[in-house]
Length: 147
Image 1 (cartoon, rainbow, N blue to C red):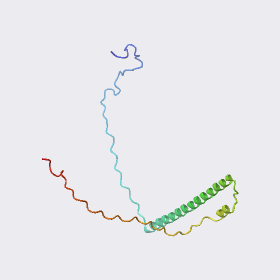
Image 2 (cartoon, helix red, strand yellow):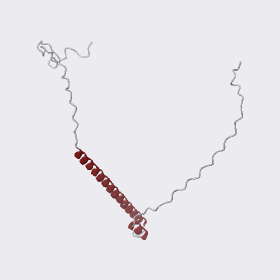
Image 3 (cartoon, rainbow, N blue to C red):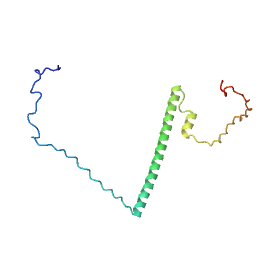
Image 4 (cartoon, rainbow, N blue to C red):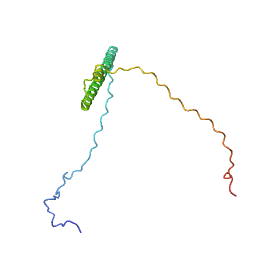
């Protein structure tokens, strides 16, 4: 028994082919064409003058990039320092102290200088352990079978 009654199915919805679409001719499926082999790309030849020009351009570009990175780092450091000073001023204002105090003004006038520090002294090492005395020889009864 089927779920769908055959008398309910509308024949106009499901069309049945009345004729072969090929007209009775045999269908042959052709394989796709083989891809053409690509020629290896010819390597560009440079003269010695061209090589020198390329190398000098590369060196110049590297130097420019390094200078740009350094400049960007300096600007970033300066902005960070300015932002820190603004935060310090805001904290001092919130506390109620005068933001133009001599210590803050002196700190803003001169950037912190790096003072040379002495090499750190090495930490003392723990004493080396003394060798242990030899362990006594114990005869085991497990070495021999129980029978």
